[in-house]
Amino acid sequence: MSDSALPLSGFCDPRFEGVRAAFAANFRERGEPGAAVCVSVGGKPVVDLWGGYADIANTRAWQQDTLVNVFSVGKALCALAAARIVEQRLVDLDAPVAKLWPQFAQAGKQAITFRQILSHRGALPAIAKPLPDGAALDWAAMVHALEEQAPWWEPGTAFGYHVNTYGFLIGEIVKRAAGKTLGTLIREEVARPLDTDGLHLGRPPAGAPTKVAQILAPQSTRGNPMFNFVAPRVAGLPLSGAFGAMFFPGIKSFVQGDIPFLDGEVPAANGVVTARGLARMYAAIANGGQIDDTQFLSNELAQGLIGNPKPWPDLNIVVPMPFHLGYHESPIPGLLKGFGHIGLGGTLGWADPQSGSAFAFVHNRLLTPMLLDMASFAGLARPMRNAITAARHAGALAVPRYGARYREAGQQAPKKRVAGRR
Image (cartoon, rainbow, N blue to C red; front, top):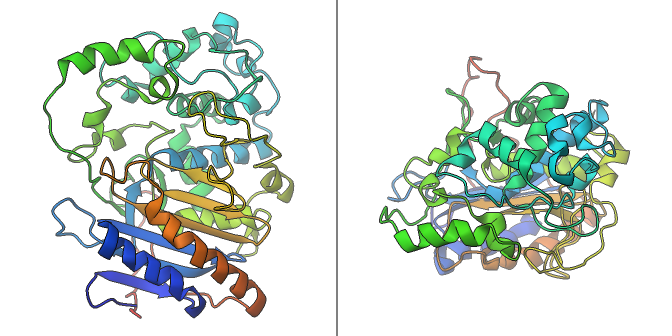
């Protein structure tokens, strides 16, 4: 696939021509810098498209193996890694977290369960005490602050999106249960069995075949002393809501330049993926935990990832975006069936078990007029939905599977395979 005016590449089932056209329109009409979209039906990839540029200067073309930081979309990787060790009976969803993590029992948290943490009902969406710049990259400091933090409401009675604390909470539980960091567990228990090098927490290992795109965010380093003074104090207030949940001192500098944010594990916010890797993960979930004749996750647990959440307004972000075990339904009624996770700027990964379909849409735009704007994906939603229905009835035409497969650190790369154009 090619477009005379735009650097687009990839393949798609002809029934998904409307998706290809809408994807191209994002670059031409909405100023999309670099992006990729991948769709699967019945576990088979039927759309695999990418285009634009992977750097701020528009000199490095987006490649089939370009990774991008997808912010909160990475929470889905964390939840699936947790599901894998639940299935291995290393941790019990309904046991108190303090059973594994005794220091967590402080300040009235002794009865909070892992299930409540996974479903954003643990009542710990923010940390009240001021944190120093760079604290988000200091695992021990974040864990200690969460140990001391009291619940913001009665745990289990309501949900409130844990924008940043989610990853540290899950990560510490996982570390104590499995003896591994969440980043290692995602590689070993998610990426390896799915045979993809397109799922990471933070920067991929040295020598990895996948490379990270730059984030298109404002690069100004000018400080704002008034904001720096006021923001931490507002964030620690009980009614700070979404601001308190999202704020960390120094977070702006984390996504500038070479993205220092990716040099640590910030599990709720620094997932790094290819569209192909993310769609493959959701394809397994959408098809009863099975992919390529491999049972990646039990059907029971795969079905239980969404459960039956009630669409009550979120205490932090207000909109009804109900969570179950790490995944949520569509915040826009009727836009999407199934469940998945959306990230800052409009990236997302999604599974629809009813149709056996899954998709991922990723890009590197951030803090532009399209911030928190789903417009670039919304244009893909209708043609994608119609094409999935047609493909299910007439039989999907799978596109070639190419791109980087899972590779152990130090393992030699296989001979390169040249991707065709169409």
